[in-house]
Image (cartoon, rainbow, N blue to C red):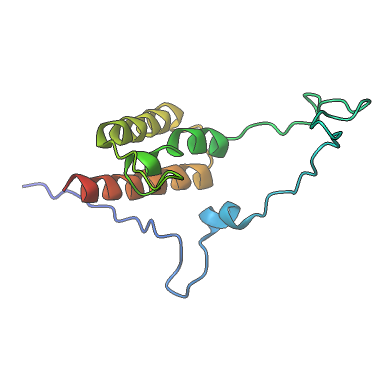
Length: 136
């Protein structure tokens, strides 16, 4: 009988010493603060101010795409409440968004850096666990 080899991967964000693992260093990066454009008393941008050009906007990253797909999952799992205290729990929609992230992972396999791949794998792992907890 052939023995199957099992690979165990530690997907925790922190080391046993409490240090953030290298592949999660981007999480601690502080976003640059953007000052708002000057506006007049009616809330209209001041004349002479031009909107940012393509060169001034930052190029989107895989993290931006993942966040767009993952953002509604907390609402659909019922973990984030609406301002009125209502819940948008919808486990079918949560599963759809988790599946979309998995499609993204599968289609980008081999094209992501190790940090990006680890981030996406870890996020999917955590979301699946939470989904199973909610589904019961």
